[in-house]
Image (cartoon, helix red, strand yellow):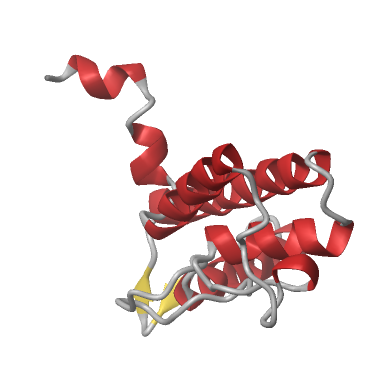
Length: 146
């Protein structure tokens, strides 16, 4: 549920290349703390990854995790158990389909109220359009350009 498709895929979730870059950057930071004077960079296929791209990926992961957490807390506050809340939030933002528990493979989302379904649908849109696109629409500076 946490790993999406490969680069260029239309699958939901966080793309594998983003995880690769994040883990390479974590190892780079460990190496930098062991050797503070070393000049190191993240490389993918022998091409240097710009630090702005790494920062953007960390921002995306943070936004993705916050979206899942907020949805999970909403579902938990609406009365779902912990497993159902976590898995439903991950399934919706990752556009996976079934979760575990009340939204498992032999269940469905039919028991949610109509207003819950609007919020759940919005969560699916956030996950499908990869967070930045949707949240950019709520940024005041974006609309000032038009």
